[in-house]
Image 1 (spheres, one colour):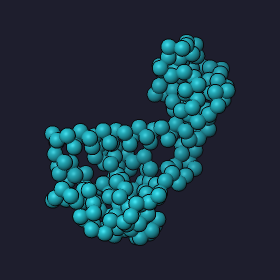
Image 2: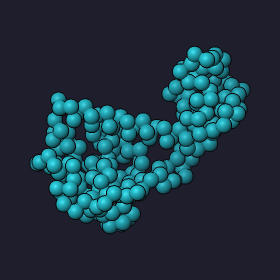
Image 3: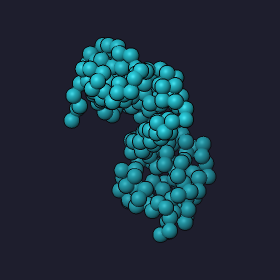
Image 4: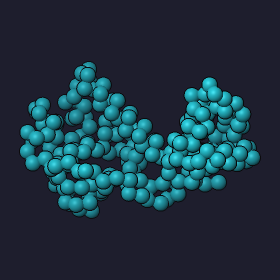
Length: 213
């Protein structure tokens, strides 16, 4: 359910602590705010309207990941100068409050508890985007992406941090599909799979993570 529009600064939690680092501007329907892979130049707080969040998969297909409305905060990747995980475009005429990341970081302050929380928020957003990426595209590409980061944690034994059944759930596939993909990667000479999974050819695995053979 979408939140109610913010019509006055007094209704906004950010505006409760003045002076507010955000300024208000209008966004027209169809306006592209930033593209996936670009470092956003602003942090946006949505006051009114709808924005689309879309992601282009390695195969080139685009999906509408989500819709964000009033009281959403977007572009937090800019606080750490990180590329955006998704493209953001206005679905309707909208009103947003915008702040350059430098101004927002100065407003928060470098040594306040809020600064630490902002850093944690940015990191958690990155993890959420990574988790979404692990569940998109062909099964073999999903597994390749996972192994590039977590190969040492995949263990066939009971003492492993991740069981293979757990990995299958993370990747949104059946355990039988995971086993088939592991065998395929072994047969191709990309990994070794025993008690631990060891990556033998990270370059080729990286290519496969993009959905290519």
